[in-house]
Amino acid sequence: MEKKTLPFFGNSRASRYRFSNGLRLIVVESRVAPVFSYQTWYDVGSRDEEAGLSGIAHLFEHMMFKETKRLKHGEFDRLMESNGARDLNAFTSTDYTAYVQSLPVEKLDLVAGLESQRMHELRLTKELFDSEREVVHNERKQRTENNPEGQMFEALQALAFVRHPYGRPVIGWEEDLNRMTIDDCRRFYSRYYAPDNAVIVVVGDVKPDKVAATIRKHYGKFSPGELRRTEPAQEPPQHEERVREMKLNLQVEKVYAGYKIPGASHRDQAALSVLGSVMSTGRSSRLYRALVDKGLTMDVSAGPGTAKDESLFYVSFAAQAGKKAQTALSALDAQVALLQHDVVTAEELERAKAKLKTEFFMGLGTNVARANFVGQFEIVLGDFTKALTAIEEINEVSLEEVRNVARRYLPRQNRCVVVGLPAGPGGAA
Image 1 (cartoon, one colour):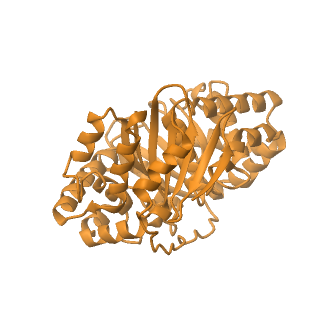
Image 2 (cartoon, one colour):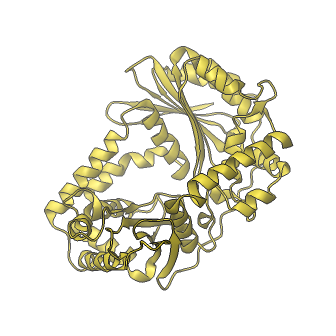
Image 3 (cartoon, rainbow, N blue to C red):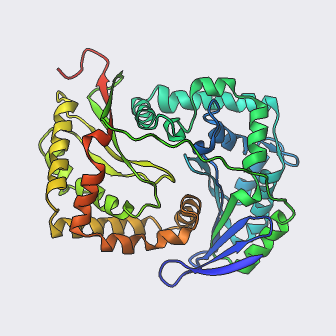
């Protein structure tokens, strides 16, 4: 077992352990209250799915709450809740899958034992699989098929990524869910749920070496997996704007747009974050004044995604009743042209940086939030400490850099747009 002491925020320190089977453990001490957050992050998301099996990472997240060789259906949740667990949750993204819980400090051995069972002893049967697939079908109906905004976001991703798996929904295409089998699920578990593809993050009133001893006790006997990761298909260059209109159950016209940008590790991420803040954070932002104050839209948001691979700089808004989305898009284009031609003011730059710093540190206010930060960036960047310099990088962004990223990434030919139109007779004229 290897141990390294790493910087965290303020006077805090993090301890990273790497076990002989490849499992990583990161512990951050926080003495505020006698509780801790325990999170298990697997380096697998929808980007890793085979064509024809979209949604299997998310469906498998559901299967993790079913049965193990020692736990019957429902017993995991019952044990966790009866021992005081809070924040019991799980989520799947394009790049990772995470399992989260918070407990009193004396329950560390319990949660480590239960999570190690889920990593190595899950019981996968056709009956459990068929039941959970039906749950996912219903979730898809609720989140996407019966949700106009969900349909628009799904359409935007598919429009932007024609080859890369980011173009497939995390929840999966309906036809892929239908063709999926329990054998697919078993292969997925065997391939990705192994110690050398996982990161355990513990944040709270704990002693790092004691946590490491507990983790070694429960996970040390597991062998590393045999994962041979295949890199996702590369997205071909985009040379012209892509637009799709959709008739949906909407009261007003809406727009979801995305400009192609590099992934989270790229050096332009800080400048893109500042650009997003200049464009849409607060009532004094460029787009708020040009779209909302002018009565064209009810709201507006803009900012970069932080995926592993290529991502999108998102812009979205809902038009005011009776207003056309195209009018607001023209106003957006005019504001982008200004950002590309002239540098923003020093006042705008400092205001944007201050808001980003406030959001950043307010997002680290709890054990759960700090563990989320560590887990996400340990997976996405390969080392969470690379994200610790985010504020320094934002502080160093210049007026010229904001203009440069607007020029580089916000041309219309680099944009994909989904326009949602009211399907009924009450649509905008």
